[in-house]
Image (cartoon, rainbow, N blue to C red; front, side, top):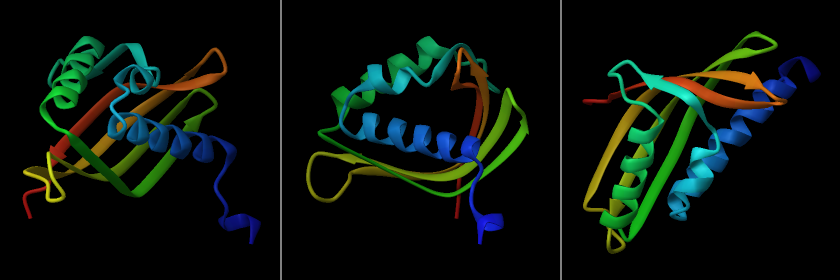
Length: 129
C-alpha cells in the first residue's frame, strides 16, 4: 500500500494548493499570495502584482467565491522543482447560484526555497467543453 501513497513533496504541494483555494474563497488574498514567488510569471507575462490585483478585484466583485480543484497531478523533478497540473472550477456571485463560472486546466511550476514551496510559473486555459 505504501507504493500508492504520495511523497512528502506531493503532500505539501497538494496542501498548498488547498490552502490557496481556501484563502481565495474566504477572501484572504494576502494569504494566497504567500504561495506566489516574487519572480512569478505566466505565459502571458502576468506577474505577482497582476495576481494580487486580480484577487482583490474578485474579492470586491463577488460576495461568494468558490473554487474546486480536482485531478491534481504532481511531478517532482528534483528536490527543488515540481510541476503541478490540475483542473479548477471557479465560480462567483452574490447568491446561492453563481453568476459567473469557468473550468480551467492549470499547469504550475513550483520551486523550493528557504524550506518551503512557492509557484514560480503558471499557465491556465479555459476548458471550452
